[in-house]
Structure formats: structure tokens, C-alpha cells
Length: 345
Image (tube, rainbow, N blue to C red; front, side):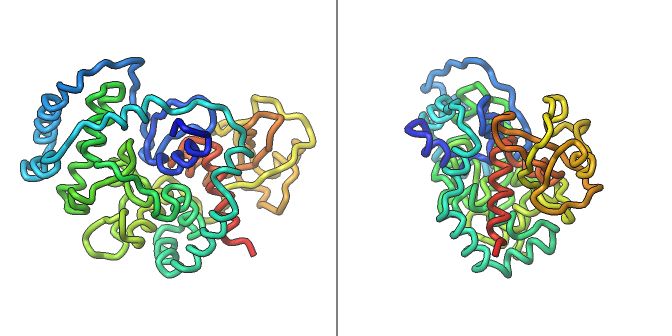
């Protein structure tokens, strides 16, 4: 992630399942877990103490209802992963523009691939869409951004990665919570220990859910009794759609659109806070020009991700729902943009 901007941006797609990256510049990496862990400013650790710490984690897991068999299997080959700490500490805080970001994360090949995957998996996608009310194009967009349609899921051992990050200490409470959730996933039989892999931060599968997100939003899409977001597309699509539906997706609206501003807008009216919402008609009276017709009574917000010198967007409730997944306006715009392009003629 620290080698180049391109590598960093590629990593963003893999890490959207992890919250609390503490990036102040766009695009912020937040997550599908919806929580923000407390971050200590510094932490010191002695790697030789890791085995002792693992024993504490085992005791904690036992106290929280994880059975001994699951604990024994999960920790049988646990190991200290120094590279996940390096990754956590070396996240770039480089400021880029929205155009820079979209150019990197939405190249033409990805748009074409998204269209191909949309057509190739229409039956499964439509099943998930019908159940949730979330259009198939958004499911494909998240699938493509998170794991490049399943090709980039991460290869780290989940238990080792989470135990290491908890041990390092800066986000101990958060990663311990994720570790307990990961053990619950194993105990419930959704995945075997030897297949339990993901990103360095613990994000898993083709939709890159953190363990707590898996437990909250994961769905068995094909009725086999397991939730397999690593290999089973029915489960991947059902879980992705369920996340958005649970967080408030409105099937009667889109995500938003780029608009033109003909009158000056003050900073006080721009943003996603509840109090800054107006109807589309009210925004039009304030000089907002739409590229296509939208119901005048629809609730909307105006955002300028790069301030007044950049693009201006009118966004709707679904945009804010996407931002529950990843609290970056850049990310949410990329999802909406890709979803639109997937179904464009």
C-alpha cells in the first residue's frame, strides 16, 4: 500500500470492510462494520509476548461463549504477522482529487467487466435484488470495487491477523471484538479454519465484510445452511444487498447525480447532515440545475467533495446508505457511478 498511489487505491477496494483507518484526506476508508474503534496515539509491544497474549484471547473467547473445540482449532497454528502492523501504520494520507480517484478505481476495463458480470450472473443477482429491493447494478458495483469481482479477497489468516492487531494495541478493543466475531463464524460452521482468509485488517470474502458485519448482514442466499461469502455468489450477492437494505435503502430512488450551480452556495448549506436536506424543487430555486428530471418533492443534499472548485452533486438517501458501508464520499460516488454505467445502453 505504500509503494504508489495506484497500489494504495487498489488497496482501498480491498479494505472497505474495515473501519477506522484514520485518514483525514479523501478517500477515507471506513467500513462495512459501521463502527469507529478508539485509536491510541502510540503503542509498544514485544513480539515475544505474543504467545502469552494469545492465551488471554483464548480465555476471553471462552468467557464469551466460544467452545473449546473451536478455540483449539482456530488457534492451533496462529502466528504473529508483523506485516499487518506495518500495513496498519503505513497508510498514506495523501490528498487526491475526486477525478484522480475515479480515474484509478474505475478504469474502462472495470466498467466493461462489471457489465459482463452483470449479464453473466443475472439470475443470481435478480434473486438477491428481489429479496432486498436493492438494484442488481449496485450489488455488482460493490462486488467489483471490494474484490474485483472476487479475484482480490486477501490471503492473510484471519485469526492471526486479528490477534496480531489486537496485540499491537492501538485498536485493541476493536480488533478483539472482531476476533471474537471471527470465532463465532467458525463455530457456526460457515467456513473452515484452513479457508478462513482475508485482508490484513480482517476484511473477508468477495464483499470484504469485517467479522461483525458478517454476523449482522450475512445471508444464506442458496439455502444450504451456510453463509459463504468467499466462494458462493448467491451468498455474496444476498449479503451485499442485505447490508444496504438493512441500512435503509430506498428502492424508489437512485444515489444522486452531478449538477450545475448557477448561484453561489454557502458552506452552511452544503453537506450530508439531516438539517441540510431540502427538496429537489427547493434546491432548483437556489440555482441547482439537474441533468435529468427528478421528482420535485424528493429529499436531497448538495455535496462538493473537492470544495467549490470541484464537482457538485445532488445526492439522495441511498448515497448516505452507501456511506454506512464506507464513510468516504469518493467511494460512494464511485459506487453510484459504476452502478449507473452497468445499466447504461
